[in-house]
Image (cartoon, rainbow, N blue to C red; front, side, top):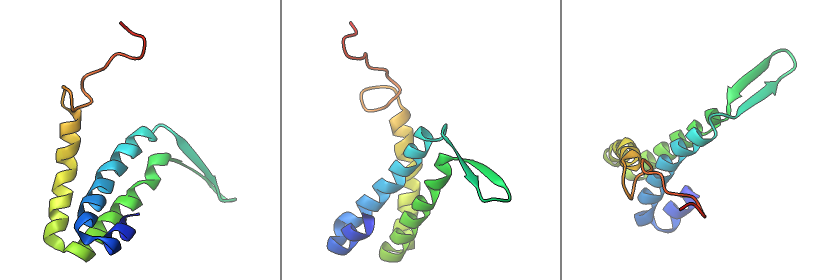
Length: 105
């Protein structure tokens, strides 16, 4: 998805790739509890499902580096923890405040 946006419109490519770098760790936290078992005949490996998300982050960072250069890559890497921190803040924009469910008064 990111490569198609970069090819079509490089102006939106940086925002798209940085967004993917922000979404992937969040997705890995959601699926971290699921375990995947690999039986290769000799040995059975058990790994968390989130293990498979991180290569996508590395690919997106590499694409930013190739297309936009090292300085923009540093900007993208610095934005990831900042956005995650803002998401964790209590209030309207962050996830720290619990909203009531449907039908709860």
